[in-house]
Amino acid sequence: MDPVEVTRLQTLALSSFQRIFVDLRQSQAESANLLALSSAQSEHESELALLRQKHADEIRNLRHRHSMQVEAAERLVRDVAPRIADEARKGLMAESKRLREEIGKAGEEREALQRQLQTQRKEHLRALREMEGVGS
Image (cartoon, rainbow, N blue to C red):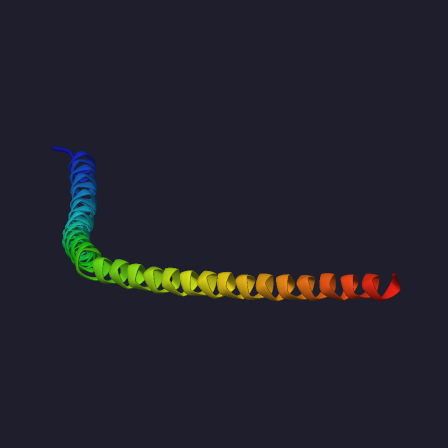
């Protein structure tokens, strides 16, 4: 073989090897990038799983608190409402009794005023008769 041909072949081989090394370095860089992306994706998925679990726990706690509040409200209605109604009934009965007493007193006062008016009327009529008797 001709030395020029050998040099040309060696140059081609060297050029091929350089391209192979460049491709190999790019492949290694891409592999490192993929590994970093895979690691970041795994970390993201772990964080997402933790957030989902935390969210599920919060929902469970909220439902439990809501259930406890509903039970407390039902207990309040069951236990306290009858007492409130009883107190209100007692208050209404006392108010009714007081109003009946006031009505009774007003009736007595009216009767006393009627008697007083009747007496005044009789006295007025007697005074008129006396004045007529004196005037005649």
